[in-house]
Each structure stands twice: as structure tokens, then as C-alpha cells.
Length: 329
Image 1 (tube, rainbow, N blue to C red):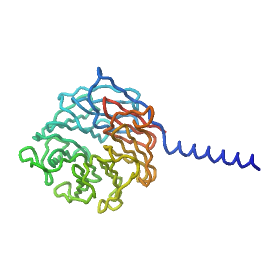
Image 2 (cartoon, rainbow, N blue to C red):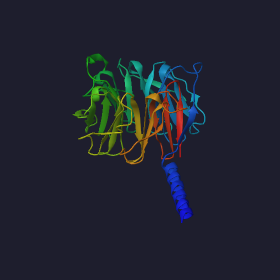
Image 3 (cartoon, helix red, strand yellow):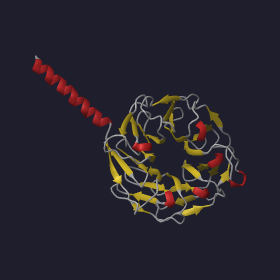
Image 4 (spheres, one colour):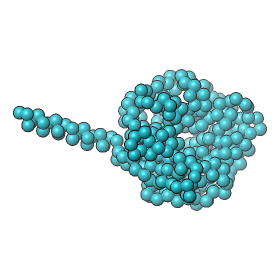
């Protein structure tokens, strides 16, 4: 009887390990840098599919991979402005934004990048395109720009100011997420969350319940989304932002900054931040697992600024000193 009980317990433990591995994979080094190679930070990473991805950062660096992160190549950039964000709508067509109002465009998978004129002199922290024509760029002092022609021209819109009339004291906006040409959200400093239902012509403030700076936002549908930020903040909404509730509490992240978030479904998502923290949920954020951390023995201590989760099988995190980690199930 005792032997049968021990065998039953052993079988149950094995099944738990198997299903845990199925839900949570492993993070491995995809790219590690040295001061001789790149002394800056990677601020954003975006994958068009499981194999083709791009990362941008300080000094105008642009990296690309075509083999799911096994190797990374530097791409030529006509400007050396620090880059804060990158967004691709397919494997060839993408934009990057950064310091001094910089916006770059490529239509050939990064082989060449063309500067686009925004007339903005403020840093642009976030860029998002719904399709090859309609996109938004946002940045310091609540600046929001919109284009209807792929960036050939950019126009300041309500809720943000262009360089000629940037107001003092307006919260910086750091990231955007649009589900349609009309409906989207932006997040930024001092707990700012705003929603638009007319493509950005008008914006409505949503009550985040926090004064922390917010740097990441992702929605999977018109009701379900997440926002992350300073002080270990992870917020969730199931009603389109009418109300926001706090997740990932009591995890010892109060002194950390969660800088980026990406969900592949309404259940599974990854958030990344300071001290090499990588959080993973498979139940819509009801529970979060610290999958990697510089606070753990042998963990990467570099801060991660960007995350891309192109499929349920792979994900990537990018951050300090050009470090990129890859997650695989």
C-alpha cells in the first residue's frame, strides 16, 4: 500500500512538472553585448513573426534577426538620434521613433531607412501603426502626432501638441495601443491613461488609481487590457478602461519599474522591467510568475525595456547593454 501511495505521488509530481513546463518555458541568451560592441540600451523590440524581428535603442542602433534570434545584425541608420520605439505591420514595413522628433521608415525589411519629417523637436517615445497608412507617434509634453499616409506627413492632433506649441508640465506619453483606426489608448507620466474613439481627435482620461509613471500598454480586444509602470505597477481592465484593478501585488516589486508588456491572448502575457525581472501569466494576470530576475542567483541583472510575444511558443526581451533574451517552450 505504501509503495503504491509513493508511486501515485511520484506520478502526480511528474505530471505537475510536465504541465508546468508546457505553460512556462525557459529564457536563454539571444544576444549579449560588450562595451566594445554597444554601450547603450535597447529600448524596444518588435517581431513581425516568430523569426523576423527588430530592436532599437541608444545612438540610433537598429538590430535585426531573420532566424528567431540565433543571430543579430546591425542595420544602417541615416540618423544617430536615440531611438525609443519600433513597430512593424509586416516583415518589411516598419517605423521607429526617438529623440528630436525623429521618425524613420523602412519598406524593405530595414535594408534602408528614410527619415520622415514630423516638425516636432521633442522626444517621441512611442509609435504605433494600424496599417500601412494610419499611425500615431507620441512623446514629451503630451505630444501626439497622426499620419494618414504612412508617415509622408505628420499632423499634431487634439490631446497633444507639435513642436511649435509644446506646453510645460503636460505629462509625457510613452506608449500607444490601437485596436482599430479609431479606438486606442495611450499611457504616460503620473498615472496617465487616455482613450480615443475617433482616431485621436479627442481623448478621455481614464482613472488609473495611481500616480506612478506608466510605460507599457497592451489590449487584446476592446474590453481587455493591461498597463505597467513604475513601482511594480501592473493594472488590468475588463471593461475597456472604465475601471482598472491592480495585479501582481505582494511580489516584492514595489521598488522596481515594470517597463513593457505584451499579451498573446486574453490569458497569456509577459511583462519585463528593472533588475532583469520577467513576469509571465497564463490566467489573464490573476497570478504572475517571476520567470527570471537579476535578484535570483545567476540571473541577468540588466533592466529590460521592451518585450515582444509573437506567438505562444517564443518571446523576446531587450534592454541594457544590448542584451536580448529569448523565451521558448
